[in-house]
Amino acid sequence: MLPSNTTDPIYTDAEKAREYLEAIRWPDGPVCPHCGVVNSATLMKGKAHRPGLYQCKECAKQFSVTVGTLYERSHIPLNKWLLATRLLCSSKKGISAHQLYRDLGFGSYRTAWFMAHRIREGMRVGELAPPMGGEGKTVEVDETVIGRLEGQPKKFRSGYQAYRNTVLTLVERGGVARSFHVESTTVGQLIPIVKANIAHETAVMTDSASWYRQMNRDGSFASHDSVDHSKDEYARYEGEKVISTNTVEGYYSIFKRGMKGVYQHCSEKHLHRYLAEFDFRYSHRVALGIDDATRAVKALEGISGKRLTYRRIDQA
Image (cartoon, rainbow, N blue to C red):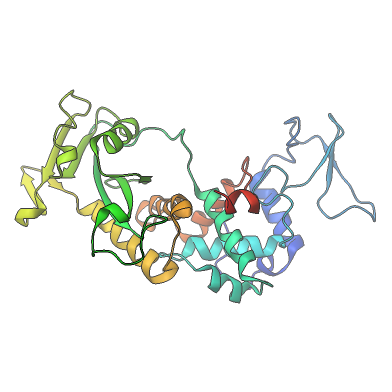
């Protein structure tokens, strides 16, 4: 686990950080990212070789622990990567790039901003995640709006959704969260995402919005219940069954406090990475037995097989 003490050597010494990352990524010995052979590499110890450089005995190619990860070709010392990951994972509502810029002593704000986005990319689950829920489980579905769409006026009628970014979130009670940046709140936009991400045996709960009314007419789920917020109904009890969307509303309370209070501004093209960050922390929370240190290790495990260049993120 990542130490909680921010003065630990892995946060101040790049060599200690490299050794720690090797232990996390290579528990059975060095793995060649070129041919995939495990524990068949020689550590290069020449004066001209940088620390942590290996040469594969099978394909003869050289590599280090950062090759094939989000850290590849980064000029930022590994100890600062580990510290930034630890800070972002342990801050419930996030930590701004300006704060990282000050705390880590970077030469520019842009470096901290890019670093934070690469860490968020490591938190992103991807499109191959298994369906949520299952037999005997409940998934709550809701949507909200945040920020404003690109190209829209800065001043518009309060709450007017047509000018704002729409977010759809699925939260499994006692489980994980999964959020999506969608174009609008229409049946065609929302329902396919809901059906693709929730198992058929699941009990689904929503509010009384019109786009959810016919969601289960084809029997896609075990059941579909809703609460009517327009009538001040926020929870209904049918025996032991609690019908509400309070869990997903709780997720949004954390998400909006972080986006408005910490990040303050998020452009439309980067919203999906911020969603990945809040989903990750919620899905690896203390209530599920995952502490800050374990959560940070989970984030480090997600750096493999991903690349994110500054040019790509700036043009995303």
